[in-house]
Length: 244
Image (cartoon, rainbow, N blue to C red; front, side, top):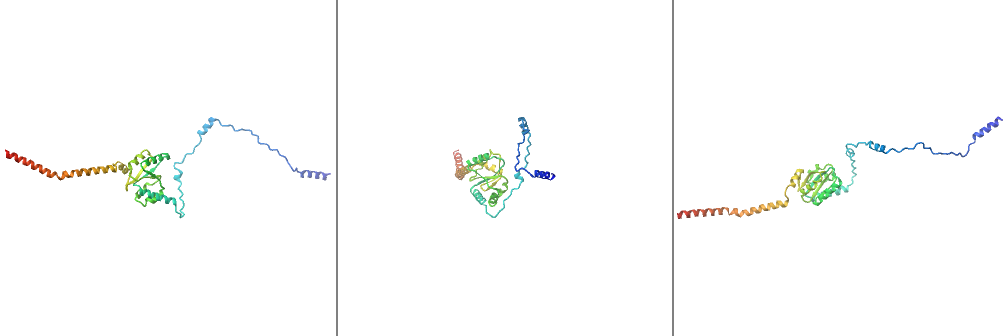
């Protein structure tokens, strides 16, 4: 009797169903997130923390990574060097300007105003400028090329027109120039613009020479005319004495 009970209990413990059914239910939502009031949203937006910007730009703090020279010739730099050499040789006026904080649209209007007087803006990388100007007669202008700089060129010395065009752009600062192979400072350029034009000077020189040539005959005959006048006066005085 005891043996049969033990065998029945062991059989019941060893038997397990092959399939079991479980019922899964979704979790009951007990709390819904209530929308924030509109006034509170405005207060949160106004009191949101805004991290202050650094006083110095990251581009100024982080050093620029210079690409390693693999011994290959930079074709773009070579082309820009040839263009800069051509600009220096073909133009009599080369002025250096510094671009501070002028916008793109204002800078475009400035280029258009200069273009009306056949004055052109040329922008080249600093390494190209230092490479070419160091081997030319404009070597003294190299210390002016620091930061965002560009050059203004013209085949004629149109200094007055250039100063009038940049007068409406105070963000552009004139640093120096080379006019007719003469290096000029900012004040020197202003003084140069006040000089009369070449045609006016030529007219004044021609007028002076014409006046001198017109006075030459009178100067040559002055002494003889004066002598004749004195002799006539002397003869008149002798005639009066004889009649008396």
